[in-house]
View (cartoon, one colour):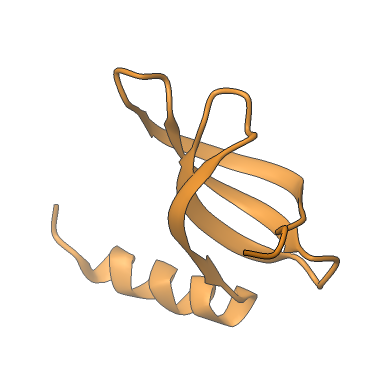
Length: 73
């Protein structure tokens, strides 16, 4: 498997933390030197490992925000 390079440009929010210290976070991340995208995934405490996640463009995030605002929680 090829090395994946990433740079967390901006930490936006920590949504939860597991008993092992991993945190589910929303960040702005540049993957392999590409333009940064919004990224939601689990991160190890030292940020050296990450779980599977989803990346979103600004348009995706705007659409998600609108959808969440319609939810009755």
